[in-house]
Length: 509
Image 1 (cartoon, helix red, strand yellow):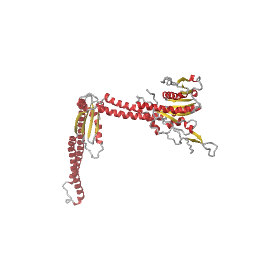
Image 2: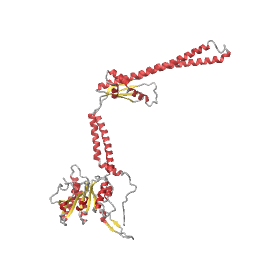
Image 3: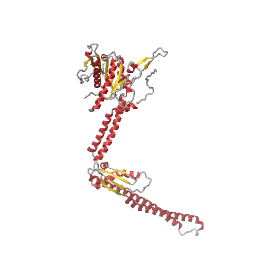
Image 4: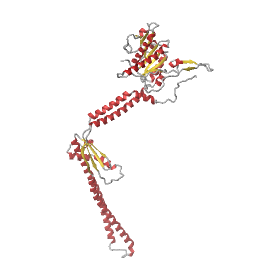
């Protein structure tokens, strides 16, 4: 069966690939884990190095003349703001006999309305005793001020009602004088006017009685308000638990550091635009991912882990040796962000090919990674690029170079006319990967495939390109198919899978 697959760019490609973003953020877990740990340590250090000042608290029950069951807390919020006035602060300082300014003192306390009639006062001081004394002075000053205001309001209301009553009494006296000794029966002609005077007198008498009653209620209600406003929770020092504060601050610092680290990692991943998925790296380089190696562990490994590492390197070496044997031209390994790993791969590959004939590794790396690498006795020789021209033709050469920024592109063809790219995932940006592919194409150096170093373990994308058989290893398995009535032959692609090596390329220690 003849199949044909082509990869065409999507016209509606998303502006932001969430999968790639999640992978990039997860790969930078060292950053946001470090920031989270830093936040935890800073939070705990703040609790230890900057303990809260001594504090005291008291609660005052406040009775209001206009209390309503459906009050939303407006009255108690007004009391909390009245507490933070220079008048109350000055009275409290006078009772404490303190020379401190009221403006400075107001920064050391605050009032909070707990319910419609319950006010909490929090005060700080230089010591627990001073904080308790300040809280008591503030509570007493507030209660005295509130009682004074209630009494003055009741006195003003009672006086206004009595004044209104006096005016009504004066008007009643005039009505009584107009009536005199007359009655509707004694003067039938003026009976209508006399009846209106009697009605007016009755109305005035009722209103005078009402004003007397309201004035009495205003006077009687004041003692209830005065008795209802009192300190219900005596001032006491607030005990602070250092372990609890340290744990709380550490948790807050951990959360803030984690959020900050994730935000920085996400923004950095979007701005840097460094591909980490196999699919993206293969698309940007225009070559298939033929093998991959995990990042070498930083801590000492266990025996079974070292065994898996050796097996992974063996599988990778076998895959590359098969590729080099199938090429009649010299093959090079060009690294991007993994010079040390590429050196190890090149030495393993040369050792595998040494049994078939003389092999020399040509060192084209800008650094000493290959020259200073540990080699076992009998390992292939490593020569510099200058000595490579003097080697006889029967000696197989494996060039090792770099395509990092600053590369001398015209010198790469002397390392090998065909190449395998060894790329560390997430190291280079998409623009530089495009540059590498374009420069290699300009130098007419076909890319046989890509060896991916440090791939994301949860990456499930396919790094194989189905087009470009002249540069992809998959193209080596193609064979001509029937022309199907056309002048151009079709190609039938045989199913070949890229070798995936799940373990790291760490050297045995």
